Length: 75
Image (cartoon, rainbow, N blue to C red; front, top):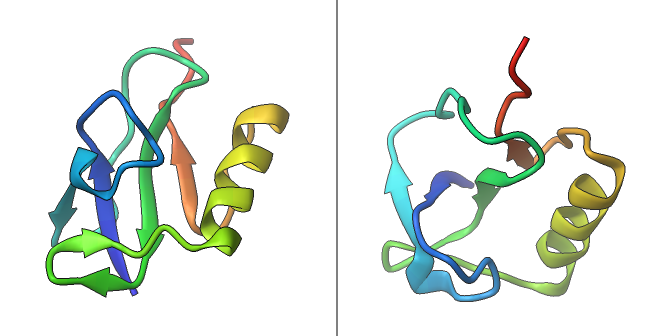
């Protein structure tokens, strides 16, 4: 699996992610999607039901999961 930074506006569109070489640090606006870890399909994440469900869980719970990282809340 590979890490992808969320760089667009639509989290369910694979083209709105950028492949990165390692897990990114997630700073900025709280409670927003930062990065996901998913299977790499020609430079885009495979947004299967499992990762979409994990993204929903992370956003609803406002907590990072194994494969979904949210932007850090400011101190």
